[in-house]
Length: 213
Image (cartoon, rainbow, N blue to C red):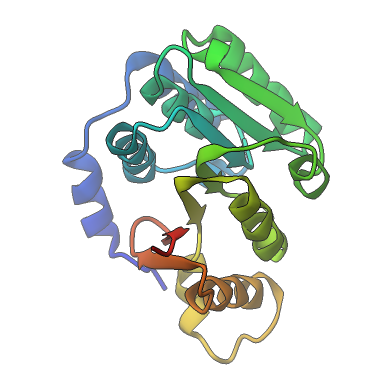
């Protein structure tokens, strides 16, 4: 099941500001060289993250799940000159690709790539972060969320990707695996009295959460 009709997705992409040349090259390289390029953030999601940074005045961003670096560099481009993106990646091969993209980018000086298990690395970080973007192992989403909430600035926001998981979250015949993990995460956030939240049907679904007033 496609959460959003492919024609609607294509229309949205066509009416969204395209990435600058450097980031377009990261997209092209990812699509050509990676076996699962769909793991990369889509254009609409990337521009939404940029918009959240722009309107919030965010200066420090945490990303859980770097993949090839497109998301990290997109967010770095939106930050002020003294801004910082801390991005966590556990896969050495993928991290090497991301590091190469980061080192070639004019925005790379704002990105700190940390190699290692996110569950372990999150415990070592010092906040606050103004935006936390989660796009990693779905079975650990609740753990990432709880760690992110501890590191979040008072007016910060958490954004979690893939929360519709290809539409399977509404298929009650599936009660295991990553579908169930994503479903459990959505319920966890939605019933958390510490935050307000919204689930957006953008891409494969984005969950946004911020501290309740």
